Length: 387
Image (cartoon, rainbow, N blue to C red):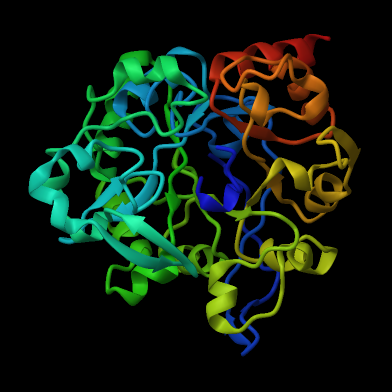
């Protein structure tokens, strides 16, 4: 899950022809299909239908407790009961490997600044319209990135996580696919992952297209089928449309704030905003090539001026009408990330009442949620289901 979060910080769905998906104001038409039934409880191995509901998705692993996108974080998410692990946010290296980082800029998530041999790699680039200074994965070979170690991204909110700085290296997507199989055998149940293509338009312009690389690895490991335990996501609809021509995996379109535009829309001159995509017409179009939505939580329940919850929108019911599941992001335990009425005190690293917030969001009928604290989510689900 990426910058679009505005961070403070298998029978899967059956595919049915809903018509061509239209990308861009220029009307580039891709004849893509696929819609989905909402997730529900079922037997293991049955695709999306096998997942508990609401589904608890470990956001970048267990990033409330360990530096994100590390095997330490991924393993802990499974230990804490996550149904799916978001492993990982995929960005490319200079030599074309896919690695798991929150962003291509790695100054805030690795110890690269402590490596004098890479001091000259620090630079400023325009990333999806935003001037960004730091070190970028596409300027490093995989071998060079493997000399770095992960650090906590938001130490002001998670000072205890800094204890684990330097312990884990940057995982590759191929390593994640192997890890998934190892953990499935070890734990005796199917482990699911939920990777995301990051800034796909940006990287395609650099000759580092993500979708083909993702599809190649999924095919290599036999995980490119509709029942495969790998859900693919992106904030750029065109990336999901491209993936839909390459693999049969469940696909999810991520949605940021209502007034924003996906970057591929900006590049294509498509004037539509997220608000347009969540209209009945927009949702029907998305259901033509994807099985789900990953909206920001504010698209599920709006907020008042004071930051407290206002009223649920019609997005859940509207999406369900066209067969789309909803996995909004991101629930976190710390005060700054919670709706105002669920905060306790003002400490930036203090826990509020996430159980109250989980209850409010679960009551809207969402199919699952991304959370940095999988154990809290699992307990909140039990409260909700048994309450």
